Length: 117
Length: 112
Image (tube, rainbow over all chains, first blue to last red; front, side, top):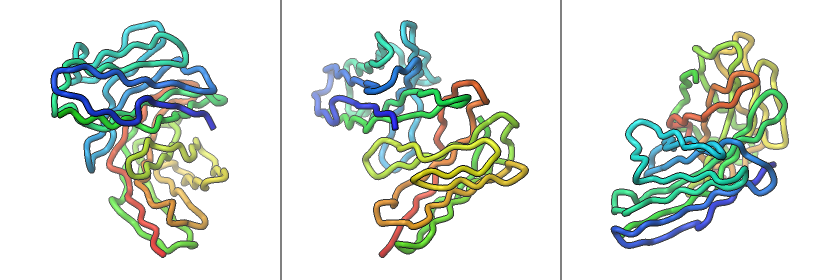
């Protein structure tokens, strides 16, 4: 199946600094990528939808100036957490669309665990 | 996307079949049923999806009722490594993209 990678797999940063997370589709081109956040013992929560070459669409309650998303190519989307605070500590997961026939399959990255101290 | 309902937890013995139900009574005619699973501290893994017909792949089988209001994911010979949270999602109209919206899923524990 299609492979999606994320880098880094985990990161620890100090409060007030910014962190960039990369999401790559390794063997397919993804017009659309998605970013999720998951807190302990909770389900995945969609943060934003990222389309190549256009601005991301953010879910209600997600600050677009804090979570900067760039989708510069069909294989790369980045999420930058700006001025991170401890409450931003979470598991961040990206996914990418891969069309198969008349339907789509979503492939997810392994996730990035962010800890803000 | 149609709302789905799953039991919060299930368990089964290693080597036995695990049958995970999902209710999606409000699914529309052109929406698919997707199944994913998430092993602890990993990203979700795609398992299988279907529209009307039953589907089978190397991981699992998907049985969709004739009225499409419910489905069952079958892991024919569960192993300890199948312990995970399983998510059933209804969405993605035929020919269109969709955004998976995750509920709480079913936590499956496979025991020796």
